[in-house]
Image (tube, rainbow, N blue to C red):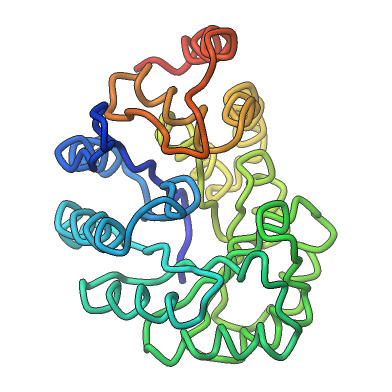
Length: 292
């Protein structure tokens, strides 16, 4: 079961005309996160700008991450696409590279019907790698409803969901309908992590943990120990950072936050654009509370 604080890491780029991968910066960021005590890591998710990575870059980021992690924690590679054949290629490549799991966003733009969505995920599960469904209607235009999740959870290789619907009632229903199965329900919204944990969720695939891994881990560990008072205090201490991560489209703020924290970041690729001066100043003020 995947659990705990699992950062969805940024993909650092060099500030050169072609915005090449900053592989040394990527390694440095990963070492910092692993040393902080995180419970897993996700390369090539939405936060990693997977939409603007070439196949070769995508596979390179996954390979570098697996190499740098060196078996210390699970690597859950983002391998989603709105083209099932492309998602299969990326999922097979992740398995061959040694990934411990695949995070697969539901197909965006196509808006598949129910049977198509189920066949999409079953095709990927046939690669024989643990698959985590990623439900984020705000990006995909389609909601993966609890009854679909429950049906997918019957497949032994579909082992969890990253839930970013923002609907706590829906997430509660997903947890209710998958109880008794080996199935992880992971928060896809940092600010809903604690409520989801209280309902039986297992952790978070986090944006904020890129820059504040230890406070996120402390909140999770307090909850695990049954110290709800400390977990709530940790949640509210992190709340300004949770909000700051979304003052612009993800991952624009978190890449800037990483740079402000002395990590490798670099620019975002078009059609995203870098954080403007006003929002950078706002982010810098929030980040002072998490400088360590």
